[in-house]
Image (tube, rainbow, N blue to C red; front, side, top):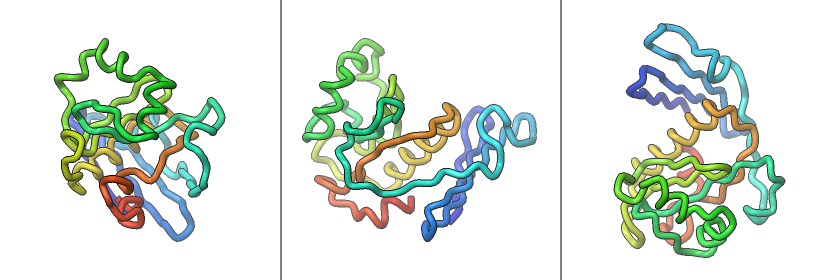
Length: 170
């Protein structure tokens, strides 16, 4: 499976995934300069992942955390509330003025936490396209920020009732 995302700044992120062995090749190209952008990642760098049953907050401190809340920035559910309590995200979001500008399909990266916003408000349906936008942005940010360790639950598979086998291939 190959996905390509174009960004307004001229960069493109292309991800080629082989989910049978868990390897992903990511290439970032800056169309403004017409070649691969070494600032982000070199072609052929691999992101290996594995699924582990472990509490999201029990990973070492060098791990970044990804989780989901609605774009109205309400923290509901056990995981979101625990992350909010630990990282004080609701105050950070308010202080940075995110409350009025967030849309479904976006990602906020603050400190050690990626907050994916797959739906407009709590209890509204999550559209596949918005999950894909979130995951594309997450991949782009991980490459740009050179994130090597990321812990993420099975996003959108609890209350939103998405199938993990479908979500993990987006």
